[in-house]
Length: 103
Image (cartoon, rainbow, N blue to C red; front, top):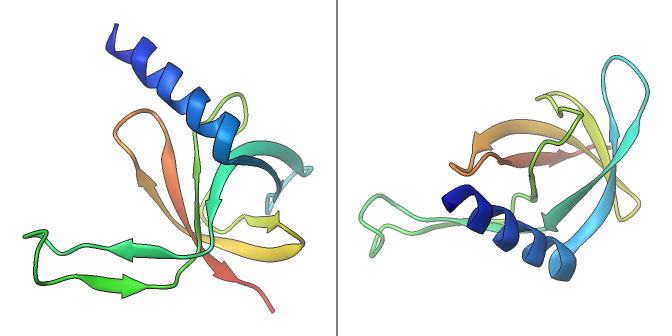
């Protein structure tokens, strides 16, 4: 039941905020995926109050289907090229990929 609700929530978010990004893996052919891209992010400290740290590091959220994205792969988003720096599990079967702009 919980996974079903997670799937419904993800699909709703993807239908509103999702976009196609092109994955260019280090090995093999490129492929498109549907993901949610943010060109900035915010990190919050452990106490969720005073120790906030703001960053402008872009990231995208992705739930793997049949193809996996790896750290070090390149992605093309909105015409810009990025490299995946870190994959952080979201606790619901997906990942948040922190990005570094190439070039």
